[in-house]
Length: 110
Image (cartoon, rainbow, N blue to C red; front, side):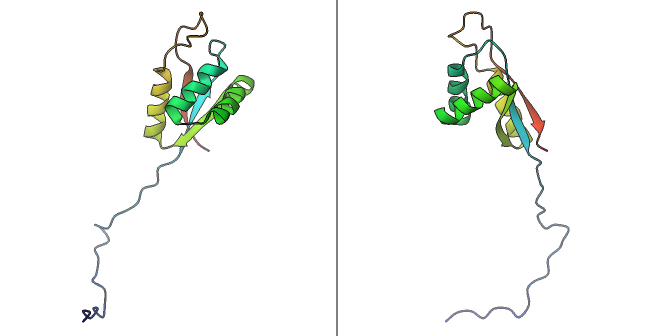
């Protein structure tokens, strides 16, 4: 036999109720340079972001033609982590003059 439900709900203390906090979105923006190949960009986007090759190619074209491309929109903390990962990815082995990783920034999404 089911237990009877109370006629009224218990009072709650609004000072101790959970409050959801909104975290504003941030873009991870990949910046163009002439020292990295499309293959490097596509591979990096696959390894770090899980983008399929086709999407990586589209982003590589955008970086090349526009000078920058949004590769992820996420929380600030996660965006900063992804920027650090891009900076640590290393040089392009296909281009001899390449001395390091690509550049990226995290910016608030508008």
